[in-house]
Amino acid sequence: MSTSPVLVWFRRDLRLSDHPALNAAVKSGNPVIPVFIHDDQVETLGAAPKWRLGLGIDHLSETLEGLNSRLILRRGPALETLRTLVQETGAGAVFWTRLYDPAAVDRDTELKAALKQDGIDARSFGGHLMFEPWTVETKTGGFYKVYTPFWNMVKNRDVDAPLSAPAKIPAPDAWPSSEALSDWNMGAAMDRGAAVVAPYVRLGEAAAQTRLSTFIDKIVARYDTTRDQPAVDGTSGLSENLALGEISPHQCWHAGLRARQEGKPGAETFLKELVWREFAYHLMHHTPRILTDNWKEGWDSFPWNRDETTEAVMRWQQGRTGIQFVDAAMRELYVTGRMHNRGRMIVASYLTKHLLSDWKIGLKWFEGCLIDWDPASNAMGWQWSAGSGPDATPYFRVFNPVTQLDKFDKDRQYVKRWIAQGRRAPSETALSFYDAIPRAWGLSGDQEYPAPVVAADEGRKRALEAYENRGF
Ligand code: FAD
Image (cartoon, rainbow, N blue to C red; front, side):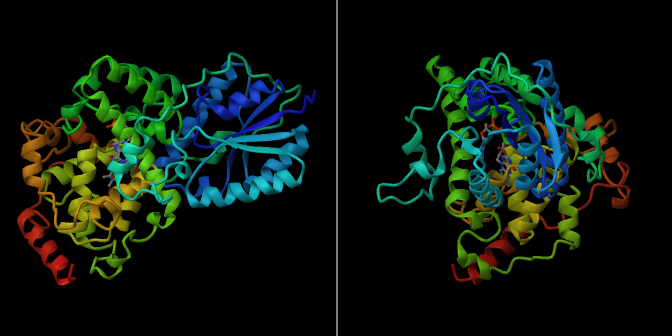
């Protein structure tokens, strides 16, 4: 039997349990060399996702060391780096977990063919998704463009039971050298400083599993109601872990199924949300242009403002539109690297409808700020909000950020948490926004809360006029 090592190339799958590629490598009985490669696709990540990825790599590295293994870090183009590692270690195989964004697909397809040509057993595995996008088809063999039929098609499918983490990872006789993570400066672009966001991070596999258990035990039963209240700890909060693969969707799904069997009312809704994530990947796989272009091409002629340097856009980014729900959510984003889903819908609606700005401006801002940034969910969320996406909320459905606040933050807990202005004793969280922002923004907590950049009713009227003038 061959004893040449297997390289396991980690990317957005920073876990040891339910990791089919790692599992197969360990099962081969050969030494296993875990690797992370800092290539162009890592280099070009937004500030917060890149910083958060760095934390995840560090954590995985420590976990592997606890098992007498290591995470070898190398910087460079992926194929070249893997070839060098194959040469240095005598590895006969390279395994990894599949990704689905077009840049990763192009890289991985080319790289797999090249490694195979070199005589290497190059293999990709599932694990990031429950339903491979090409396995879900309509009756006529097409892909789904609407969520509900997609859900109906997958809801009763068997989802693989999660795999356990390997008890041992066989080490090679000699380890190849590794670069130092600190030399990669993964947090270099964090204008607001990592220290502000750090307390809000739920780092690593063990923490994600603990949170899943707490969520299932204590929260999911009331999830149907609590999931819409931004001031309440009423959702799983697992998106950052799912985005980096610190937990697998299968693990969440099976926990949700058990909760449903126990009769917890919100469990079904949780399962549905997990399927929204799958749907986003389904759409990205079949129509990768969802990341860059209006999914409905008819929207190309819509008179969206495409200038991201306008005063209105800047005020949106800086959480000073004068609309409380929008500002609270934008400040939450800047301080925590996360934003409640209701907030995401409100701020996206306000930017694209009240401010008539191109959704790509918002997409890009989120890509820089979110620690749970996910290419597919972010693009689907923005195009859904703008009206240009598949199964989108119609453009004429303009969220009213004032009545939404009355409905979902009746006692203004969320607003108090994030907006310091106008309060005699502002909350610490609201004040922390001012520690987070770049000096160049020139803001302080004692400035007056601004008048609306565009008032709720006026913005709605303007958006509807623009929409009607376009002849929809
Ligand atoms: P829960 O309510 O606990 O849901 C469980 C899981 O289901 C989530 O972790 C997530 O993986 C998935 N999920 C829930 N809602 C959605 C949804 N609408 N679309 C896709 N998956 C969903 N989600 C991201 O993970 N990354 C993003 O970059 C992202 N950008 C968004 C941008 C906009 C404009 C909008 C409207 C939504 C975006 N979402 C994004 C979706 C959603 O807001 C987050 O997934 C959710 O807020 C995460 O919180 P949670 O983990 O507590 O979710």
